[in-house]
Length: 180
Ligand code: PRP
Image 1 (spheres, protein in one colour):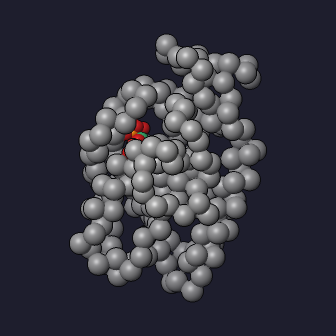
Image 2 (image 1 turned 60 degrees about the vertical axis):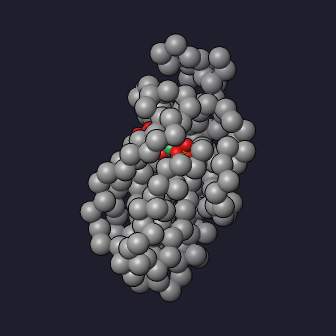
């Protein structure tokens, strides 16, 4: 594959290879199994669309029994920065007394995670753990255990491995950084 690709009006160069992602995803899966040792089962909440690829790979490395729920979380609305307003839809599981694992593709401003935590706060859950493939710590003040974060980035715009630009680029097996 060429080292520079174009998606719509922007150019991107490869930033994290598929092999590096696979190594990190496997390490996070092990750490999460350790985190949930002794727990009968958990509920994973996969944030769509971006986290679909990370979640599919991550949960296949894990051995913790789980129910799977998905929520549509929307904040970018097709652009390169978060809009600040998060819309959530689609919970189907009963969360009371359950250990929750939120699977995010990227924590940017942190508003999506805040909105999810807010939606869970009155549901009497046993615990909530967050895992994210990518994080931009300088952009948010939420406390996420680094053990469950794949990669920490400066505020660069990235696509691939589930992440999009104007709904394109999600299928790329690696993570690509915008160079425009
Ligand atoms: C993106 C991304 C995260 C969220 C992160 O979703 O997938 O869920 O924004 O940004 P935040 O930390 O500033 O909230 P988006 O709204 O683009 O929807 P998508 O997952 O369908 O692409």
